[in-house]
Length: 405
Image 1 (cartoon, rainbow, N blue to C red):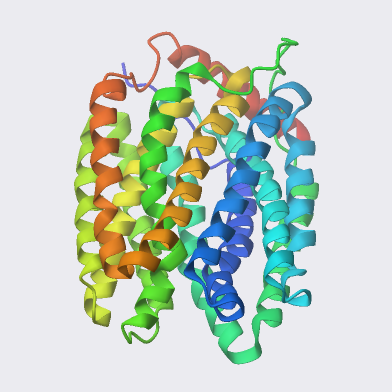
Image 2: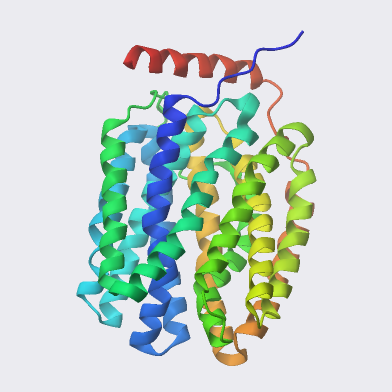
């Protein structure tokens, strides 16, 4: 018997993907531009790493609380609070060109980022049907890839032409549009958790989350120092690194999602780790633009493969009333890795230089691959009894959307 294709491209799915694009655009413009601004103010690579670590610590604090509120109080309010925080803080950076003040703003900014992205990812997992979960997550994370392709080019170009303040106002405008969209768009209601126990982490998400910590360490080092590294070796147009990185993500993620649905996680995670090791080796040897961009493509393919796989693994086995906690668990691990990576990379770069620092980043990848093999390689893609439930849940979501029309 051929089962009917479960609809994926609903209004709710398109709406939350749009909001996610705008969130990531506003955030990534700062992420690629702020290290240069801070480096000029402080003259220190360590300060750049501290900035990344502070925003990560704040996100780590925010995500468990956001996950709990998402499951107990509903999705919409938490999403709006997170967007309000990051949009209101974005324009403040250029008005206070002092290292200590910028670091304080960065901490608060990270709190809003953790809240808003935990919310948007949880809403996405609500509206994606389980039978097409890998494919749906692949397409949803394309919204992040699109922003990665555009934000560094937009941010660095505006900063070079008009100054850092103009760039922050552009990011603020994008986040304001995201806020308006979140107010207007209605999403299907999900049954709230009735438990009074504060359990911000979801047990089924812990093992892939541990693996993601080690992947995040490498991503944190790449995003914190790729632009500075490129400029240090005389490479012009360093923004192209992020563009090529994002194009590779854009191509890989939908394919990876379909492979997960058909073949399972091992068919994507192990090749992803191999690609990521290759990417940091090439990056550590980059002294020209072509090699620099090859490293970006390899890194984008690797990250798109591993992150999509691990996030799907972390969320797909969680009950609907615990998806907020599952997303909070996963992104807590991701943020922890980003923070450790940014801070440790800054320290290592100060001692050894950027090239050797990136070569050292092979070590956490090897640890991550071993931990995946030991802990997570046997996790099932979809629970045996979840498929029929997911179909019914999707039908309810469709009915809620039709009622709102």
